[in-house]
Image (cartoon, rainbow, N blue to C red; front, side, top):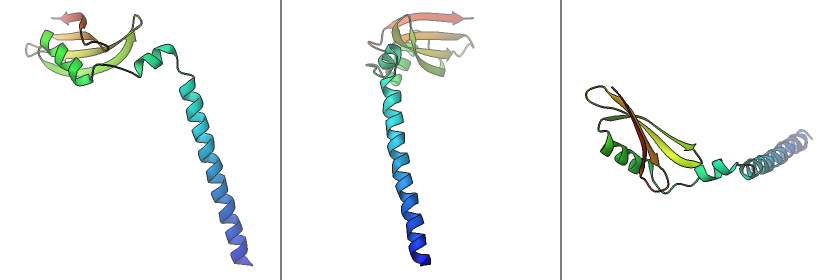
Length: 108
């Protein structure tokens, strides 16, 4: 009798885990369908992070400190923060769609 009770409890637990997994999948699908247009655009880029860094370093040589991908003025861009050997810092904005340099800000 104890074995039947144990098997019953185990089957309830396993059934509950299946329901939880289905709920997680529904929640994930729901969250993905509620993306904003900016988030949808941010999910797809034609330029890799490595290519964006290469473009940024061609304009402002140095050491890359940080790279962020964000939407600026409706376009997806990489913001590459660089510190040069003479300790000047700069932020280079690279278009994530085609890789061209959008802006360069250098602080002495």
